[in-house]
Image (cartoon, rainbow, N blue to C red; front, side, top):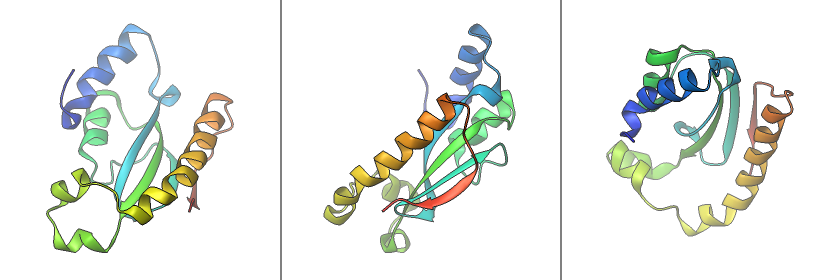
Amino acid sequence: TTYYNNVGESYQALSQFYQIAASNTLIVADELALPFGTVRTREGGSAAGNNGIKSIIAHHGEATKRIRIGIWNQLVAERDAADFVLSAFSAEERERLPTIEEKVLEYIEAFCDDTFEATTHQAA
């Protein structure tokens, strides 16, 4: 176990033990830079400011596949970023979560079926 900002340490230990290449890894993470409901997939690339992904890149490289789920809303400007990320969803956002979850599950299935593609999608 570790803190999210150090998740690369755990990731490296697991990937070495099970001999999993970074390109065969899928990371699902929230993304403060994307509007709520946006789901973006990508293969490799930078951490885009996400400290957990920075840690993974530092320990195992950039070749992972990723699903980024947008959480940004107008309240970001009123709060510290850490407080915002840890706050509860609004009632409206909670109503939209099932649609977002459905889209994310489709991308996870595509990863498992080896048909994963980089794209941006407005889920809800």
